[in-house]
Image (tube, rainbow, N blue to C red; front, side, top):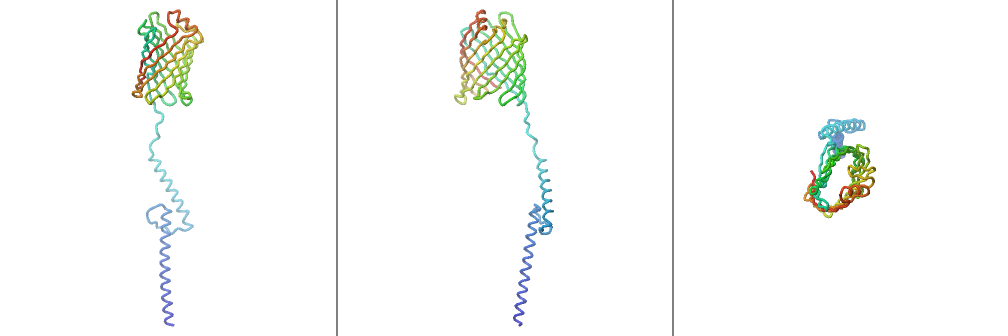
Length: 297
């Protein structure tokens, strides 16, 4: 009996030790769970996770998360400025033309200032016969441009023409309604309607295309057409289809902003305009060899 009672006491002691170790391990797991729920790296003094404690810990975590996100938002950089103003100016054509009637200095310049939707446009083009009678014409346009579709601007404004030469100088002013943009297959188009100060109506279409032979060697065909609804003898303009210019220019872009070119251009007047040219002793058809520069700023 004594021996049996000794074994019983030993069994009770071992059982008590094992139960105590189990309780310690349970408490440690409970503290770790509370730490994970609180989101802190410090030991929490809260009780082990129980069903009644879980909602409180969850609410605290959500509040801390909102506060944390708010702090990050205050440190964000300011929004990107996407309404900046830019400017551009270029000579599409600055050329010397050798023809059978006269050698001509010709230019075609375009500049603009503004943003993505609204721009102020300034355009100028003209001819100066430097080897004959020194006659020439200068055209200047001041336009407001509004982005209306992808690659297209609507342009409204004024155009002023000034003709000079051996006789009396003449000038007139137009209202302008036009478009400028990029058509499918990368054709650059500039159709425009002009209404003169006397109510005369005329129109012009300019079309060009850049064919990349290499990344720097570019062939550009170009066409210019003019029509008028009324005759204006003083300015050598007849009713109907007035003139057609077809040119081909081969340029080499030393830099994107600087490109010398050579080319050839055929010009012809038609109908009443051709009759007015013959009456003034001018040719109705001309072929020119071109040497020029294309410059961008």
